[in-house]
Each structure stands twice: as structure tokens, then as C-alpha cells.
Amino acid sequence: MNFALATLLSGGGGAVNDGPLAAGIKNFANWLTEPTRYSVSSILAIAAVFYFRKFFSKVWVITVFFALATGLFVFAFQDPNFNAIITKPDNVPIIILFATVIFFSWLSLRRAVINDERTKRGEPTLEGELSKQKVFTWPDLVYIELICLVLFTAALLVWSIMITAPIEEPAATARTPNPSKAPWYFLGLQELLVYFDPWIAGVLLPSFIIVGLCAIPYLDTNPKGNGYYTFDERPFAVVFFWVGFVLFWVSFVILGTFLRGPNWSFFGPFEFWDLHKLEPMVNVDLSTYFWVELLGKPRPDEPLVREAPGIIALLGYFLVLPPLVGKTLMKKMVAEMGMVRFNVFMHLFLWFVLIPIKMGLRWTVNLKYFIGMPEFFFNV
Amino acid sequence: MQKLLNYVRESQVWKSIFRHGYPDTPRNRTLAVLSNVFLHLHPVKVRRSGIRLSYTWCMGGLTFFLFLILTLTGLLLMFYYRPTAEKAYEDIFALREHVPIGVMREMHRWGAHLMVITVWLHMYRVFLTGSYKPPREFNWNVGVILLVLTLLLSFTGYLLPWDQLAVWAITVGTNMARATPFLGHEGPGAALLSFGGIDFIHAGDDVRFGLLSGRFVGEGALLRFYVLHCVGFPLIAATLMAVHFWRVRKDGGISGPL
Ligand code: HEM
Image (cartoon, rainbow over the protein chains, first blue to last red):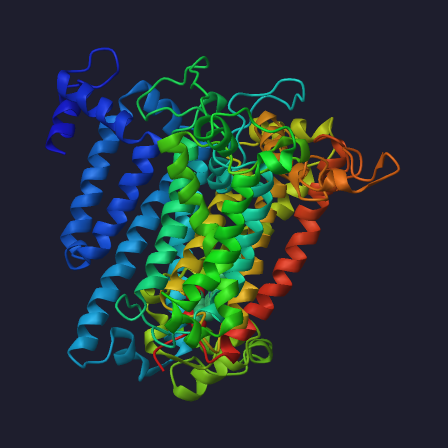
């Protein structure tokens, strides 16, 4: 941050005459945010946060984090490419999203760490201590609500006066803008279009998200952690939601907003959105790997035969794997949940896990489809 | 001054509205909540743990408040907006250019963005406090529907300015529907639904056509989205919010350790 401030003060920002250090930081940021590294490093970051949660839940840690983030932001703001994206009025909410999600994740983690320590010492949780007392709605609750409401309205008003809502050129169905982006809250799904066909990324997965959310209360049979923050008493649930919500949903919204440019190509935060940046498409179907590379034959013409390896792999994944682990590794879980819950859970969970699996295979071996049957629009 | 206040408080008009004295005694505080239809959403007494900002983050409350702001500002915008391909853009443009310090459109747009964020954070907090566990399973489900409705409200509203951003974002979004299995003309299985060489599912009758009332985002889609945005979804959302709040109370108030 010192450095960021120093550059700022010396007026050393801007793309043209970057000092070596500024250029280094920018190049590093561009390098680190490339989708593969972005995803892998965020998974590592989440793992580290949970593992060292005592450390990360300290007040000074989050203070330093936000100070650093602000410093970096001020530094980055001088860069014309970064500036061009960040100052779009419709992107202001994404910054709010970023800041609030991080802050509240931290807050919940902090309360969980405190509660877990209290429980270990045999004391009641923070919530437990207070829940025995009852207070009058008027004035205690009504005043809190009123104050929230007034401050919030004031903030919204100031924002509305300062930033005018944008309007672009009139609609023209013949002129497609590049990039064409869905509304920001769906950008996580649009990001998945890189890895899956629309019928999965745009139809199946959203349906499973909704069904899965609805099913959560009926699948989670752990009676603990009801009405207070905790990590130790429900580690799987908490980690699962962090990965699903913070990593896959929110962070892909941020990725989609700031780092995806024309043709949905990736652009680092300090990179110019070049219309002609082309990423080579070298992706290969599983069937090609199997028939051509492994057996050294041409691919059979009959689609079902051609795609047999992928079909068998996916059937095994969805149909054989659940009973298999249910009888062995997850025996205890089946006993606790019952067959129906277990199977519903496994099915949803395997879809969830298929996302990182497919991403990983795309990055490592350029896998295009497990099953590629464009004849029937059936590509997985 | 005190006299005047007392006079007002003793008047028949005042007494007809407020059927209790100043809420500084337990009796009057109880009455203040019980005799007001809006405050009556709350119980008379609440657990201290449930009202801490560090516990609820106030996100459910803010979501509801944003819904109210959006209803109000949206109502005002409806006075000046005509949902036709010729007029829609013009009207929005006029709101921007001809209204000095106009903030209605801004409050509506930024508020709508914020509402999506607050719903997500609300869900996040409900999950992290395990508040979906019995007895609140059903209310979590009502919440999930409210979440979907919030997104749909925002999505339908996105089209209304009728500028490039709007039309193409909705095009990208609804293109997905083309790929719906069986029901979209580019979806897996749709080709199976044909009889004697005649396709039942084609670009002119699949789900996307139904969403847009056309093969592309045109005037039919604008009207359809407008009606859903201004009438359909808000009505459903308001009804479900009533259910949601009712259930929060019936399930024992804001969750807390048992
Ligand atoms: C339009 C959207 C919504 C509104 C206006 C709303 C409003 C509220 C309010 C005011 C509360 C009281 C406690 C608090 O503020 O945290 C509440 C509680 C609750 N909400 Fe929502 N909510 C919405 C969406 C959701 C969603 C998306 C979910 C979950 C998927 C959800 C699940 C719940 C549950 C389970 C409770 C009870 C929590 C407890 O007792 O601690 N709600 N909601």
C-alpha cells in the first residue's frame, strides 16, 4: 500500500509511463487473474482462510485487507484500461457486492470462531447468551429498523444524485454489441458457457440450483448450528456454501464483469479490450481421445458407438458411483440420512462437482465434451 | 408548547388514530405494536440475540425496504413511460435529459441492483446461521421463490429502457431457453418430438418464443416484460413476502439457539 500511495503521490500512474514496479504489479495482476489461475488460487485462498480461520477472523486482518484493497484500487484507478471498466455506472454495484460479500464472510467467520471457542470452554454462544433476554419491539427493534432505513435511504439518494443512470444507443437488432453480456447477476452462468453447452449452463444447472436450494433444509440432517454462527459443528455445510456462493457464484460475476471482454475472451484488469484478441480453440472431444489417440482408429460413424466411452463414463459417474460410495466410504452418511435423501443429495452434489471437474479437464487436456452429439444437440 | 402537545394528544382526532399513550411504559409499548397493522408484523417482545445487526445484518429488512422504494419509484416512472418500441427509449431518454435533478430513475435502477445484492446476502446469512433448519424449512423455501422472483423482476426491468444494453442482455439471457431439453428448438430431444416429418418444436413455438412472444426480442417481448415487471411479479412477490414474514413469526421469531 505504501508503494501504491507513493506512485499515486508522484503521479506515476497511467499505462504509458509506468515505472518498473508499477508495470510489474500490473503484469502480475493480469497474469494471476487468468481464469485457470483465478479459480485455482481462489480455491487455495478459501482453503487457507478456513484452515487459519483464527488468524483470518482477527479485526486487524480485515482492516489491513480493506486498506490494501483500497490502496490497490486507487493505484489501479490511474490505469486507463482498468479505469474504463470500473467507472461504468452499472459496475458500481459489483464493487459493492465484492466489498460486502468479503466483509460479511469475514464477520460470519469471526462469530463462528468465537462461538466455537466458547462452546469448547463450555460457555454459551454469543447468541445463546443474549437469547435468554427479551426486549420490547418498541423501542429496541423499531429504532434499529428506523436508523437503518434512514441511513440507507440517505446513501441511496446520494448515490442517485451523484451517478446518473446510463442509457446507451437505441435498440438495434441488427447491430450486435461485442461483448454481449447477460445482466450481471447471471454472469456466473454465462461464464459456465465456456465449459458447457447452453442446455446445461443455461437450463439444467440453474434448475438444479433452485431445486438444490429448496432441498437444503431437507437434506441437511445435522441438528446442530441452528440459530448461531459456527464452523466446527457443521464444517461441510459451511465450506460447501462458501464454495458455491462466494467462489462459483459471486466471484464469477466479478470475473464476468471485469475480466471478460469482446468474444468473451479473457482480459486482465490492466489489459486493453482488444476486439481482435483471439484465443486458439484446440479443444478435443473425449471420443477423439479414445478412438483416435488411444486405439489409433478413425471415429466410428454411428453416434452412439462413437460416444460410447463418454456415455459409459457419465453413466458410471451418476449411476454407479452413488451406490458404490454409499456401500463403502459413505456408509455412515446413508445410515444417518436414509436412502432417498442420500440419492437426491448425491445426484445434486455430483452435478455441482462436475463443474470443477470439467474445468480442470479443459485446462489440463483441452477436453471439449464427454459426450459430443451435435446431431441431437446433446453435448455434455 | 407542552400545552399544545397535550392538547393535540387529548384531541378526539389523535385518540381515534392512536389508541395508546406515549410508548414509554410496558403497557403502552405493547399497545404500540399490537394496535398498528404494520408494526404488528413484529411480536411485542423479541429475543435480544435476534435483533443484533451483527446477527441478521439487517439484510432481510433492507430487501423489503428496497422493495418498497422500488414500488414507489416504479409507480412514478410508470406515469412517464410507454412500453412501445417507438416510445420506450424516447421516454427514458427524456427522463434523463429533461428532468432537473431527477433521481427517480436512478433510485429505481441502483435500488434494483442493490436489492439483488441484499437478497443474496440475506440468504447467505440465513444459511450461515443454520436458520433453515427445523422449524424453518418451509420459510426457506418461500425465500428461494422470493429470490427467483427478485431476479425475474430485475431481469424483466432490464429490458424496459429499450437501449442496446437492454435488448442484447435479454437476448443473451433468453437465448438459453432455445436449448431447453425437449421444449427448445435447439435443445436435446426436441428433434424426437416430430411426427411424420413435421417438427412439433421449432423456432416459432418453443419456450423461447413463448417468453418473447416472437422469434427475437421485439415489441411483443417489451409488452410482455412490462406487464410482468409492473404488475405480475410484484403482486406475486408482495403476496409471498406477507407469507414469509408471517412464517418468521409463526416459526418462533428470528432464529436463535434453542
Ligand atoms: C424478497 C426477498 C426477501 C425478503 C424481503 C425477505 C425478508 C425477510 C425478513 C425481513 C426476515 C427477518 C429476519 C432478517 O431480516 O434476517 C427474513 C427471515 C428469513 N428469510 Fe427472508 N427475505 C427474502 C428472501 C429470502 C431468501 C432468498 C431466503 C432463503 C433462500 C429467505 C429465507 C429466510 C428465512 C429462513 C428466514 C428466517 C430466518 C431466521 O429466523 O433467522 N428469505 N426474511
